[in-house]
Length: 333
Image (cartoon, rainbow, N blue to C red):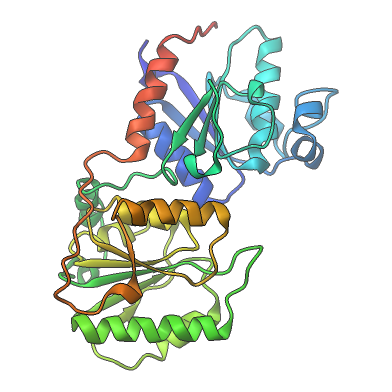
């Protein structure tokens, strides 16, 4: 079976972090994919097992485009999109066509609704149709950073060397960053800057609140820069990591942690928010494997920080597993 000829629909709702995971996996599998953004219809989203794909209830705000594409594989990510995955599989089954649905993250639904689930191992879930991932899915590894570096449009950013990259997350729907914690973070960045005496490049995310961005901009030291306004799909920050000596990343984002630890660079972390049980389990595993350490443990620029050498990331590994499963999947036309 020639996988790059199999039409695949990557379906998202505009949430860039989740869509990027689906796109990265589609590329790793080698599928001929198309990205479509729709908003899930509320009934299919809230009652996916019962109503999605049944009783003429819409799946989304644009079912016409969903149903017009002759897909054989669909990729979705996040609980909000699970109803669309289930509904499309039911729809195509009525047409006597097999549809292989792959869903990333725990949908909190019966496993039988999906052909494959890709779920982070810190969720502590297992099953025949489940592939466990270490963190989130992405395209970052030591070798791919060079390709990202070549695509950086800014000559100034492209010429960076031996600098420290700071990846900043932000508030979540369950937790807000306090001013005291923001002040602690700014103090820690200043301490690291003084310790290493090199340029620091700070890369905020869409979740980074103004309280932190404003405090970062107020840091009045040499060799310090805040790079804003990055687009997730043409984001230069992987390329900015290429020639860096160290990455400091906040622990509120598993996606940023996953990318940082696959960069081949030494990684230190800082808690902007108190990690929840699942996230803390993931962080603890990384510390146990000596892939990260907390920034407050860094007392000297001479400390022996071992780089994370990675030639294959989780997305590549999982892509190979799914390729084998697709070879045994019967697709009718």
